[in-house]
Length: 262
Image (cartoon, rainbow, N blue to C red; front, top):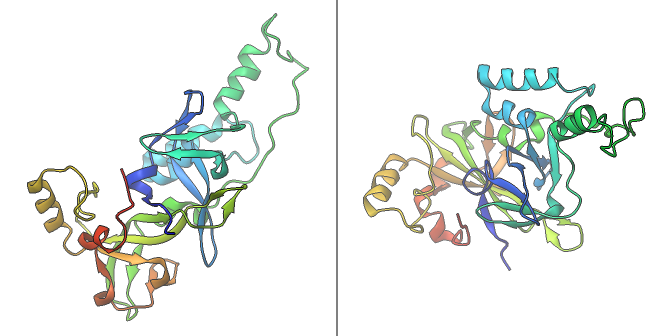
């Protein structure tokens, strides 16, 4: 049975994360991946330390720099929600279980609420053990590090750059029943083709016919690279096949990706 197929930018990144009881928790700012022969998603990353590197440039550096300035940890890291807590991925991402408290919420509780008389907190000088410190998630282990990377074919010829990453839910088990989202392919576009909106990925969707025609013409040079066609996942990403063997992006849904949903 084929697992559910998603695209990281189209179906996950920037979506709201909500608790099972309806509380708004955060947004999906990046995804942590377990590298290897079959890489897969292990956690949702959120907060400025996840979004800043993804945004890049001056704005991204300011975002991460200011956040680090106000974080007391020696090596602050993004908020991390393990994928085994994710129950549903739709218009929002629903998580259950014991969701880790966000750093800002913890700081407000410890420094502004707990010291107040009658708050029930530990109070000054009686604070409980601090949060467990964990190392920053390396750039190579973030899904966003793949986006924008150049792709060359078997002969070294340019194919384009990565615009999105396909994920298939048939990876290793996370917990007792849920399977991980495996990195199963790359959406590769020529430079200067503009933003991808999802209209260009096959015939599905409710976009106007004229919009689909314009978008597909704009992205007529775009290709889909299955993960088994990737030989070297470095920078640039090297393929094991010539460019002519790659699937045109407009045919993606008609070639077995019809399970993707937005």
